[in-house]
Length: 499
Ligand SMILES: C[S@@+](CC[C@H](N)C(=O)[O-])C[C@H]1O[C@@H](n2cnc3c(N)ncnc32)[C@H](O)[C@@H]1O
Image (cartoon, rainbow, N blue to C red; front, side, top):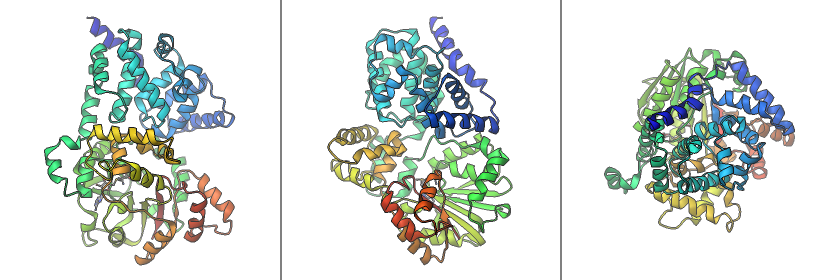
């Protein structure tokens, strides 16, 4: 009976609200974001903004991770919650019970941050680890129940990457038994997504035979992605997005799209919603990734999207051709990327466009640095166990103070989730580029560069300040010089259009 009560009190507080989730329209989201931007400009977040962000985080139809920086800034206007981000949280009973007060908007926002977003702040993670330690040593208190649920959820989101013993979490689960109830389906899902490579027989047989196909079959990445479905349905958003496509690109005539190396499906779902009248085919080598991708497509009712498990090098234009071919973060993992680019180029219908994403050598130099300082047994070993990955990550964090620049690793979201972390540092095959080598590659394939696409338009504005004469932003020699000045400009990847 007591357990029953505890369960219902946990679910009533945040989760029932979640079910009656806020029905936001795309214009509601836009006005919330505008009001947050103005708060950001003056650094004056208030309870009102916390309440607005809560509405946003309760809406499932948008890519919540896009708002995590704003959420973090807003949380930092509560003096106690801010201590979690600056590393001064004391874990006293008073401070802990403050985090249990769900009537406080900032506390509620904090719980939603833990439940819904992937944290990408190391100090915050370290504060969470200390809280787990304190909760383990304290008696059961019902006011800490929600805190346990939220911490547990975030720990799983990271793929158990925190430096905390699984026994501690097992103790907490035993003490706050309702955790079992809360997340059973979530936990199963999270387990399915990850394979502990050291404990898997078939995998150990494959150790000598490291191919990209094996790697992504056992390490689907990137996970936990959402799509801004609400924004995509909004004609204003479409009007704003579409002009950023190359001039010659006629979006109205896009009837067929190929997403080559679709991974867990975010991009495939995005394009299928952006072009609802088109037929979208998404392919990948990894069955595990395709499983995630299909779930994402179902979630967003992307009915014009179909999937195939096939090597992009095996598709031929006799079978089909496409008005748009999209491939992000894929070609640089092929043994011969140029071969892949040629194959994709051949799959275009006449007048068709390509959108390609490739790693930048400059942005990823810190990744190389990290690889070089890892202990030899860890170096470039794609089959490290989960425990070894936690150890490797700890080793790197402890090296931040002695290895100048190494802490730039924290700029990569991938540092905070286990599959992403494996992909970041232990991928068996990876090539990197600079603007001039991209130009050479395009020339070999007879392709013309149509410009980079940026999530953060500030990069392009800075470029134009330096190179005002390159109005179209297509001069890759200028971009080479630009990247020397701003080596982190393409930290995500080079995303560019060509035809
Ligand atoms: C880093 S993931 C990127 C996934 C996706 N494009 C995204 O941006 O979310 C790379 C994906 O490319 C797939 N891949 C690699 N080589 C491939 C090939 N030759 N044919 C098809 N897929 C491939 C991998 O299986 C993996 O899922």
